Length: 175
Ligand SMILES: [Cu+2]
Image (tube, rainbow, N blue to C red; front, side, top):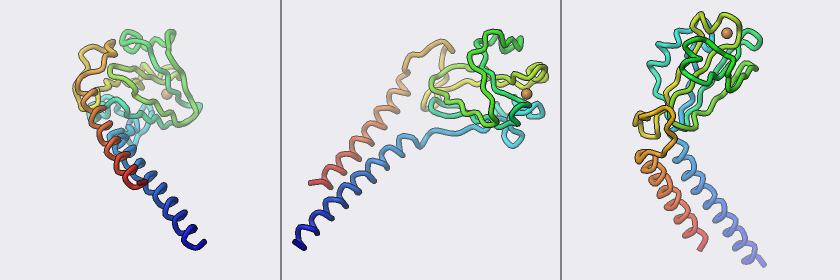
């Protein structure tokens, strides 16, 4: 009876060990993602020097933009094109968000354009143009291109190998 209980515990510990090893594999895969707080300490505001801030950032697929602002005073509007961005034209806006903290996931390479929906703020320079690069920093050749580059593929393969090895060790623990 006592022995039986002991082996059941062993089994539980093994399951926990497998879960932990798999978590490490998952965490390794997510390790490269960066959260970019737009405007730095100034936040998403008309006073922020967004061009300088943007120039100091490297945006990669999987990263997130975090807009922090006063709800009601500002908002986040995603614009459809560079033309709309240059003209502060919000008639074709892709999305409009408010609430004070807006998180935008950069899920593919290429350009995206954001501004504030409050009248006049775009013209005052409250706008953001982001060029998202593929996984290891290769610039996308065309904003419209959605093809997977070899760099992204290599990164995915490396992540898969890490996951595979992790799961392998976990299964050894189960035997
Ligand atoms: Cu604003």
